[in-house]
Amino acid sequence: MSEPSTPAAGESVPARSDFIRNIVREDLASGKHTHINTRFPPEPNGYLHLGHSKSICLNFGIAAEFGGHCNLRFDDTNPEKEDVEYVEAIKEDVRWLGFEWHELRHASDYFEVLYLAAEQLIREGKAFVCDLSAEEVRQYRGTLTEPGRESPFRGRSVEENLDLFRRMRAGEFPDGACTLRAKIDMASGNINLRDPALYRIKHLPHQNTGKAWCIYPMYDYAHALSDAIEGITHSLCTLEFEDHRPLYDWVVDNVRLHERPELLKPLTDRGLPNEAARPRQIEFSRLNINYTVMSKRKLLALVNEKLVAGWDDPRMPTLQGIRRRGVPPEALHLFAERVGISKQNSVIDFSVFEGCIRDVLDAKAERRMAVVEPLKVTITNLAEGHRETLRFANHPKDAAKGEREVPFSRTLWIEREDFMETPVKGFHRLVPGGEVRLRGAGILKCEEVVKNGAAVVELRCTLDPESRPGREGANRKVKGTIHWVCAEAGVPAEIRLYDRLFSVENPDEDSEGKTYRDHLNPDSIRVVQGFVEPAAAALGNEATVQFERLGYFTADRHDHRPERPVFNRTVTLRDSWAGKPA
Image (cartoon, rainbow, N blue to C red; front, side, top):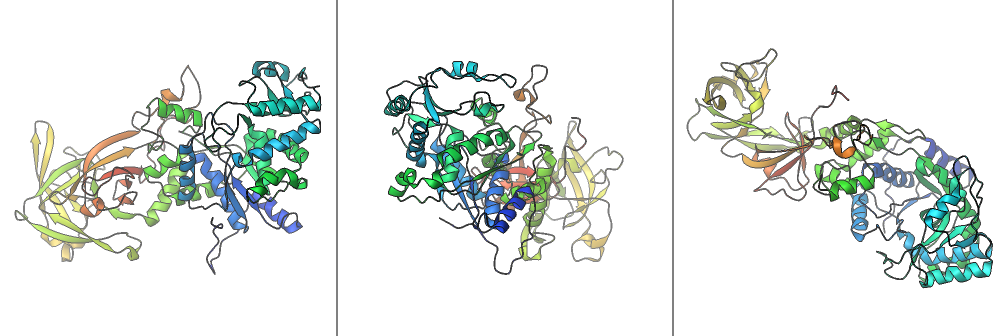
């Protein structure tokens, strides 16, 4: 297992500041902690999405910044919804983002410890076995303005509760027959403290423990004690858990694992390290972005109803989908940094995320030429069979990326939208009788338009020989420059033009009987057959380039082959949604 990454020798990293990092600095300065431990604790019941990237960057980032450790822990307490498929995908996503965990843990690693701790709570009169049904528990719980009522089973003796709890574990009762509940306060203004459930019965195999258990701890109980077992100093979670913090603290303070090494004996016997301590829960605002949904339930529905092509559909906000679309992990780091950490919930505009992608790719992506909607051009003053090789820089701002050879011939493909037979005002590309600069090759003049009915099928043009590279007329000014692909050497390619999955800012908003399904963007994907230069076709899977004048594109992670290129549009060069009606 790897240690958290640290800056290279001599590398200067500016100190970041937010309320969580300030708390960590104060705790270190006061001596409260000498070592910082964090964790990223997903439940393996679905694929990670864009919202999780903020938590991943925060937990792993703080551990690295302060020389501490960050564990990856699967909070796997609900076997009904969890699957090893999700476990493996989550591990892959965390590594793709550039992080390595200190320890790989599971809440299920601690099931025996959690069970012994529950028995200890029963012995101290702080937990009881309740026979109320789920519906009856809801009726007894009360409301935000009315206190709850105590369960008629709350007064059971310690001996009876221990016997019943052990029989629950032995599998004597069916699902839902009873639960283990904490004895806290049914009149509490915080409903989470009204005798919450600690254990429930589920006769289901578990993806990590098999059939060893038929009772499973509730999330609030297991999560708090898992943090304590691992010696987590700062338990970072999103704001929806703020009301759960009193229960988190109650569990930690009443079990007192850091004072009871005998409860940790099952871990010691198995050779599992434990650093029992009292963790502190701190909440921060979750990442909310418009034009998307990030509910696992809704994302699962999109997949199951085949409204998308799967969890890694490039339109999905899952990290698998984002990766397949071609978003670099550095863009997610930059996005997390720009969004920042606060206690105030807000909605971030999708364009901020797209801007981060552009900023990263502008610096790192090499340039290539491609034509998405091809129109044939024949250069009539070049000889039949004319072939030559031009040299282009791979990046206009980074000479270290070198140059590439680009074939050029008498016949070319240009973008259909770069020609207009009847030009509108301000159109500075190719028109009948007009000139335009052909990127890196010279000045092209349209001499003849060949049509099939109303459709333009070919342009017959001439190339000014004095405007060729290295000639005196190469700097002659014309208003427009267009790109091209050699028709003889260009490689046919499938180009997938992806856009935002939803057409409205808040697809979750249920108005006029509509749901997020009704707001799917019909233009979120358009597949076209275009042409790319040979140096683009030769790229490896997941390589990202800028197709000049078109946007940033990525060779598909699964489908791309040099002989059959497939490119996904990662992001356009400019925000195409600015000014659209909400």
